[in-house]
Image (cartoon, rainbow, N blue to C red; front, side, top):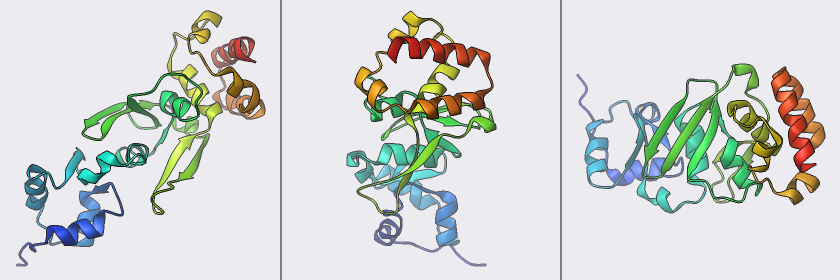
Length: 212
């Protein structure tokens, strides 16, 4: 019987640091004789961080500005960054965002770890569209699935029933300059048609009346 191989932490770190966020599956694919007890020991020593069951990163990720969005995609797939996180990224809302908010076709989920808080809202599989692949400026191997501004808005209206009057929509405090100069109304209308919802059509009509 083959015994578990004693892998050095340096070899392990050099292999997985470029990946950023890595899973048990990836580790065992790299070396099927890897002793999983290493992870528990390294976690206690502060050499790795557990992000959720079966997913890890290194402490340096705490100082990496690109890590939270990238990790959000990896921790719970399929998913893409949307809602308040995307709106904040584009400068469409004035407040900063603590949680990283994503859309998924899986059940609603939430993870809290030393890198941040990761919230996932569930939609039907046919509404998993309207995002682009953004490359990290710092990490050539990292890419992030990020909602277009128009889809982030629609996701927000779809998942939050309390946005139903002009006053409710004013409380979003969307950036007027962005809405007039950068929002693509044609894309907004195209995406809206895919929701096939009279309620959403009414909400978007109110949104246009307030901001456009």
